[in-house]
Image (cartoon, rainbow, N blue to C red):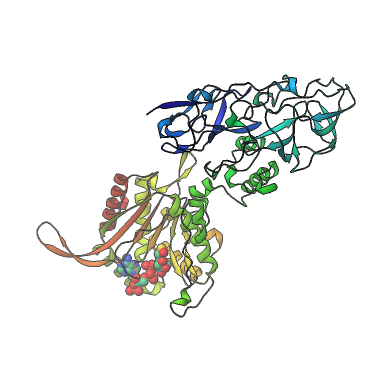
Length: 556
Ligand code: CAO
């Protein structure tokens, strides 16, 4: 096995450029001149080719690394080189010739200190017939010295061509798609008075972008200059990996996107061949800021809509599309407004909150006997005391003892509420609604029962006001009137816990000496594991069970 180190060749004045794409992986067989990585400065991006053929044994750079000439990118086993392509000599990774400084090769404009100046394509190394893919200024624009005027692109690199004079753009003499070469005119700029430099500005080195006083004559970036591998005009290498990851955008647009934190791969390009322009990045940012759109990362954190297709934002496979009528008769109905709204909320809460549910049983034998006798005594009052009213009071007591269950997450803080507004899930013909009993700690069982009856009726009649459905600090979902044993209720964000209750049943319970018939109420407490832990949840349920078992404990 002959190991060959592949180094970054001479890339002109590019120093410390970032690796933005790895085009091969360990185990890949590469040909000589096949691109291995893409690097980028703020003005140009280029692919770094392999100076030899072989099998990649080691990749010595990773995304984000800063590299410069001489840095070893990869280690190849050249013995394993494809037979049809003789391996280039190992030493070939270092370029044999340096790029000519732009000042030497580029034609010097006849710079009048205040007259019109023709801006010409400077020395761009071996770049020949490169296409103008972006015109970055328009007639009337005031440009600074070295401000980029156009972006050109070969099949291996793109770079921006700067102005060698400051002033007002009088004419643009190239169009999108034009093929240009060294010495071709790009624009006419009315120099703004200061003496224009006598040499054409070189395209691109990163360091010059914000420094109008930086030397204009710098070497051209070197995809063309060093190894033959880097020649941008080289025929397209069909063995090069398909570029699925890198969005089509100029270096300055990428830099702009990076500054704003915009994920370029999510921006739809409106330029030629789908190229992303600065305006596209701005439009994307505006859409996200206005809430009209969101990034995939935000969606994955839970901002995704409830639609079945929002799984794409989570990187999930598409929702199955089935023609159900193939299997039998069907009927389609629109989802109710409430179902759509509650569905979106439930979906977000399910995805965003790390739910855990603790199940337990409470002995409500004595409490139920008390409830029944109370209702008998108060028959004439018209108010029926419900088990749910007792549960609300019992939960208030447990929330007082375990305040983190009555809290909400707000950024990096926890908000501990000192009020006890208890929501209860109500099943209505249009879907699930959650009216709220405000200040349940300050109300008696009769009052709570009465309010609950009124709110449940309003919910069924679709007459709840927004105020009657907001502000809950904890929620109870009771299926006791229907049946079932246990379930996993979904937390009603931004609350951090919810109690699910099912139908009580008479069960034989061991009292230490014998089995006794006891009325047992199944409890299911779902809690947010970011705020609450399992031990606290178990304690909460135990305490709740003790109160429901003997309500006098509320007074303790
Ligand atoms: N165990 C045994 N019986 C129970 C019980 C329990 N845990 N809870 C209620 N019952 C009984 C009641 O005593 C009542 O019996 P009687 O008619 O003999 O007095 C009967 O069941 C019906 O009660 P109810 O459901 O009308 O009254 P409630 O106070 O228990 O509940 C309300 C009110 C609004 C919560 C309820 O009507 C409701 O909508 N529940 C469904 C909530 C829901 O859908 N949750 C799921 C959310 S997740 O999708």
